[in-house]
Structures are given as C-alpha cells and as structure tokens.
Image (tube, rainbow, N blue to C red; front, side):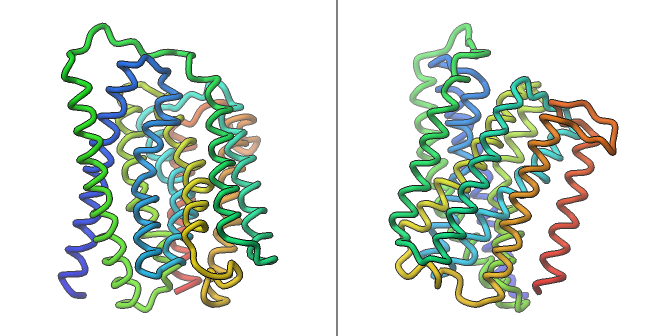
Length: 328
C-alpha cells in the first residue's frame, strides 16, 4: 500500500482526536463556569463537540461524492459508540444510569428516524424536506432533555477571568483541526477502499466510524476514570442522537439528487439496510440492558460494568468481521 495513503489516514485520525479533545476541554470549562449538570454538559456541548468528526467527515464525503461513506459513517459510528465506546468505558469503571428513561428516548428516536428514512427512500420524498424534519427531531429531543440540566449541577469554587478566553480559543482551534482532519481521513479511507476493492459503505461502517468515534471513546474513558458517569452517559446518548437525526438530516439536506438513488447500487443498499437494522437492534439491546438487565446472565440493572463491557466489545468484533467477510 502507498505510504501516502497510510500517512493521510493516520494524520486525519490524529487531527480528529486532538481537535475533539480541545473542543471538549473548552466546552467543559465553559459549562462549569455557567453551572450546568454533568449529564446535560455531556448531552449537549460535549456530545456536539465529539459529534463534529462525524459531521465533518460526512460533509467531506458529500463533497468528494462518497454518499455511501457518509451514511455508513453515521450508522457505524452509532454502533461503535454503544458497543465499542460504552464497552471500553464499562470495563474501566462501571457506568451508572440513575435515570433509565434517559436512554429510552434514544431508542424511540433511532427507530423513528430509521422508519422515516426507509419510507423516504421507498417513496422518493424530497431530500431537503426530510433533512429539515430530521434536524427538528433532534432539536425536539434536545429540548426534552433540558429537564436534566439543573440536576447534579457541577459547581466550580473559583475560576480565573482568562479561562473563558482560553476555552473559546480551544473551541476555534479544535474546529479547524477537525475540519482538515476529516478531509485527510476521508481521502485516505477512499483510497484504502479502492486499493483493497472494499465497498465504500463497508469502509464508512467500520474504519471511518471507528475513527470518528475516537473522541467519544477518549471522553468516555476520561469521564470514567474521574468517576463522572453522568458526563459519559450524556456524551454517548447525545452523540448518537446528533448522528442519526441531525447529521443524517444535514446529509439529506445537502444531497443533490433523488432519494431512491442516494445509494448507487443494490449491494450498498443491502449493506446500509442490514446495518441500519443492526444499529436498531444494538440500541434496543443497550436500552433493555439498562432498564431490565439480562435474564441469561446475572447482571444488575441500570449499570454497565465489566461483564457487559466485555460482551459489548466481543459483539463489536463480530460485527466488524461480519461486514468485512460478508460484504468484501
């Protein structure tokens, strides 16, 4: 493989990770200053920051005429966030869900968006209209989650006046790194797909999805180490909602063409369709685990610990192998 391809992909991943880390640092500091809860910080500002790689990667994929990578990235990233990110975080430190209904909304929105997207493709609805609907769904869910904003408020004893300026600088620099990092990463991913004759949809579902989920993974691990389960939970739930509703909505909004032609061939339509079903099942598995626990394994409800973490990681390995083996 060309060294340039490897360098471009690695450079993109590094820039995405550093950029998202800067955005998260700046966002958390500003949120502490304005005294918001850990869960709400994670669900809004941090989730938005860590979802920027998915957003930037999807926009770059549209610019480079790689719609399958954009859609595959959205679906694959949501699967990676639950199985890979929550699995890894759960192994490091148990994640407690004091309010299980926080996750129920994500399940409802995921199934709603999947149904609307399927109907819009079959009936060839206007892509701009669908994009606007999806964005409004994400905004409505954000407003609904505002009820958790004043609970468990993070309070900082003191902060220096220049902290706000530093936070804004981190945000700006992070945005720049994420934009250019996503461009390098998408270009490298495209070349890898062509080099090994792998479907672009599979690349989006796996390689690009893992790369753009790195910020959630880093943020979740840091939150777990610091025993900030509310921040970790809010980040993952928020990121998944933004991915499936807001970012997919933006992809549809900027898509120039008929919706039934958004995926170029029957194989890629099958790939995306099957993985969308897997995403819905994984989301259902996650919500069921939190609300009810499992009957075949002795596990506590409302938490993700080592047992669940290992199971999620193993499921993600199987999922990745399935995509490369079956569709490559």
